[in-house]
Length: 479
Ligand SMILES: Cc1ncc(COP(=O)(O)O)c(C=O)c1O
Image (tube, rainbow, N blue to C red):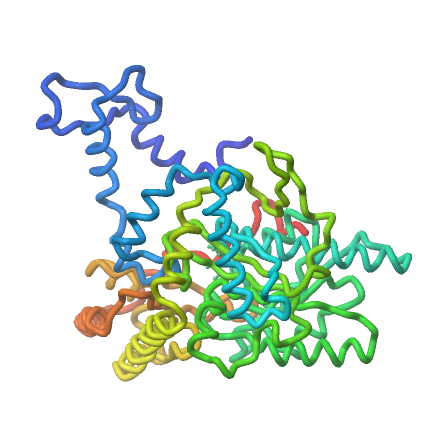
């Protein structure tokens, strides 16, 4: 493997800087000078307190997770949830015979989500937990592909060239899915003010080899919901016209835990017969620490039986559909805790507060003058904003760096094809980001504006983006 392989880049750089250096240890912690290599496993052992201190000190330079407005992922849970997670750190989710109660709690979570998303068979739901939405999307995509292959073969048609249709704004997990599982990714570009997939464009890209359309609720780029019901209606019409029966997967990584509580009248879920499966990240607006996602299928037909392994393991027969085998049980338990603790009303309160903070802050930022909102936080509690055209002496990347000096992590990034010229900042409001914190962010932004305005020209461009929605595979797009 060449040294320049991107997987190694960060590591290689730090290795270059530190190759000859050993860890420097605060003399308070040791009586004798110690030599501890940085990149090789030390030959001897260390006192656990010392080892903990060394690791702890190194982590000090990570950003403050609570001030990280780039991430969708939960950065705060109640101490009771932490206690339960500590209790379960040693439980492997896959050992369902050994930890039957943990397995039962997983099943209850699947049932609750299936009911929340109006699955027709919700008393006996088909779904599972995963490590996050990425794995959930892989599983849902595989089910779409296998289902299409069965249908093609049953009709004696070729099944070698599947494609999947989605907006170019999809999260990178969908490009991974297409690349890893040999499915052509039909990425619909953005156009003008349209920053996500439209029904019209989705249908235009479908043919008899389309395994499904991915509709995102909501877009990682700007928090906007894609029009799932319109996409389904357009695909109904396509079926009438051509006979192509194209199912829809809803990537609700964030929105599937927002819309049921905040937009009860929006029809986006299994109420639409064309929606075959839905995923969400338990660790985003499911409000659990990183490491849990969920996927639910509308019915048994949507998940072909030949994808399910029945493993004879540790004394029981266990049906599994997963990419991983061993996986922590703690996050699943924490998800169940949250469902029990908050209930529907609690989730509604938390999510509506996030939306209220997001839309209020978006409104105040719009009033500052130099900015134009792309979204206003009224769908996902997320908004993106750009600079007005007459603001030519600084860039959104300069704004992001200026905010970072106050501790705020607000990413700046460019949009994909055909909106590459659009550069924006994005704020994700999560539970715990209060109106007070939002006002402090606004104060810091207001404070920085005159200094930015005094610049003669932008100091940074897209190369300064410390944030990517996804990177294309090295050496070409691949299929
Ligand atoms: C729409 C969407 N899909 C999928 C993912 C991947 O989710 P995860 O990080 O849980 O794997 C994300 C993450 O931001 C997302 O926003």
